[in-house]
Image (cartoon, rainbow, N blue to C red; front, side, top):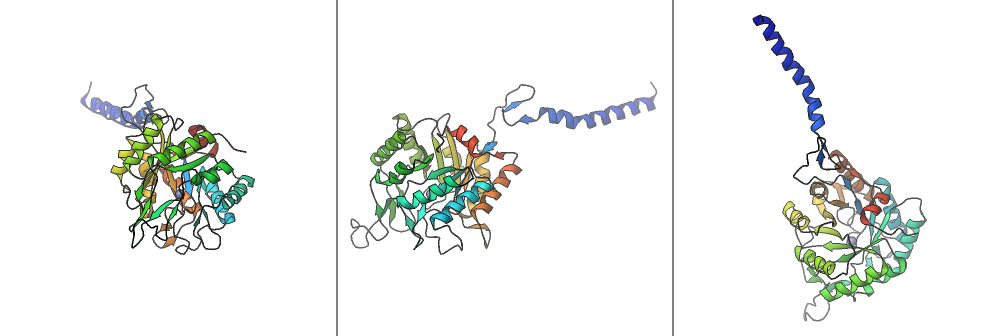
Length: 342
Ligand SMILES: [Zn+2]
């Protein structure tokens, strides 16, 4: 073979292999749903979550009504916020109620009933998740710590579930431990005996408890309740990060929790304030589901107030830009094994 022909052939082979390389690469691409290469070889690392449940916590119980122009306060506003969130892509709406006159938190079952009835009467499907975390606040008195301070709102474990018993949402929360709450003399009280009593009642009602984990010991005790048969499988955890003084909103804390859930468990995680959107990405990367909403964060961007819809929309975009998707309420029900309510 002449030297020139050989050179041309070499060039042609190089060009051909270069042009088919992307195809070969595409063929080696990971099928994100199965965690298996198309050639049949299994990957040895866990992949991110590709089917993500977005929960929107639409109002919360915080003292935020004066800090944002449109915090949902009345039952109609809270129901509308849940519907708005669902239309933007949330599968679950996490709901507190507020005193319509003052904007402060409330545990009034009639307010919960109005919110739930409005959502159920709408043409928008969304899984209703009612908080059962209220009624655990104890503020140490200024002069005598044994005398409750003005911020105290403390009731027993079953009284925290009155609205859940009445309305039977698909999900209610269960805050899995006691915590220094805020930076003063407030503690959130949820003792092991209270938690066992609450978990047992929630199980009897056929409601799915979302286990709120503010620190690693809460996860430890939640697993203890699972071992004692007080929680039905699969357990659903929510890692609540960045709330002073629980676990901070960082990769190490979220990963420490994610690495310690029992096999088959479903978990979500969120950060508050500025960490809300970074923690959306972080949860998806670690295999979890996400939560956003005005309960945890008031701003879409620096100086720009968010709405529940705009926060869900941004979370959904982050999820989609990562190659994953947000699931529908029907898909989320199947994942969580929920009993659909009328
Ligand atoms: Zn909440």
